Amino acid sequence: MTSTATVEQIPQTRKEGWFATAENWLDEKGKGAWIVAMILGFILFWPVGLAILLYMIWSKRMFSKSCKSHRSFKAGVSSGNSAFDAYKAETLQRLEDEQRNFEDFLTRLRDAKDKAEFDDFMSERAKAAKAEKSE
Image (cartoon, rainbow, N blue to C red):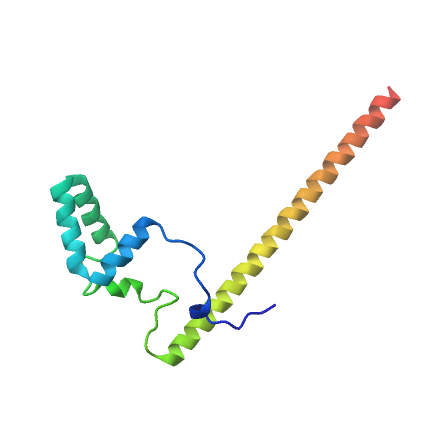
């Protein structure tokens, strides 16, 4: 069954954790909010401020013009160009289908391996029972 829904129409079933929620909120407010959070972290407990500073450097939020650029390729964010958004939705849908097909393949592979191991176990058990009867 193939779904024709675009990525924007698919509801998000995965709940974000507190860290992702805080990160998104700070990104929406901009670089200034990250700097204020870092300063408050240093004032309240210096390792927290240091962790925020290192995270800002690691994620390149410190040196970019806008924190929003880090969120621009998320599924629900529109670029403003309808042709690109349609292409992005189609590509993401294709990748989701490929992931689902791959997961189905892995399931079939695991089932086949389990069946082969069980068949081996049963044949060894039958051999052992036959050897026990012949003794």
